Length: 91
Length: 139
Image (cartoon, rainbow over all chains, first blue to last red; front, side, top):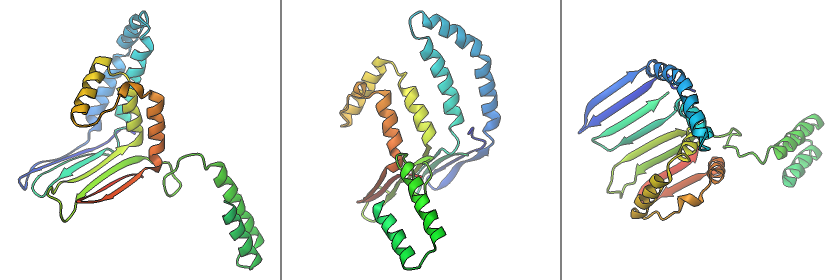
């Protein structure tokens, strides 16, 4: 599922440097629309690449970009020591 | 599975369960046998996330805590994307990994092998209790 929100937390030397929560879906929707708008160009590129037998690869990689974007929900990366912390949480 | 069937029949014989209950249990066993080939996380569901947790132990010099949760579908998609990495770049990656002590010929690992590895991750559990406590599991 496409992630709706993102939390970003950065703490350095015990002090909070970044504490961000924002609806990442507002940023992802334009990205997805842009990718969709590029589909005709991708088709042309795939047709040209098919001359060298790589047309399928172009289309598959285009589809995989969408797949990766839609599967980001649930990703959580947190690394912390007593004084510093970086946390990225996509939900 | 035979042991479980025997237990159910013994419970029926001892009167601990009725005939209807025994029948339900035996039917559940049969359906469990049929689905036994599919990798499932504890609790009967297919795993959705790969978790990696590292916590420093009492004798550890490093105090870093790591908590990573990656959706399994993202891992699959990422591996498929990795298949499109140009050969030159893969050679450089292999060389860099070799410098770190990981000597593996990634060219010999096919996308099917990677898919099998990911499919088996459902059963993966790693618990290391050394200086640092490391847990890798699927949920």
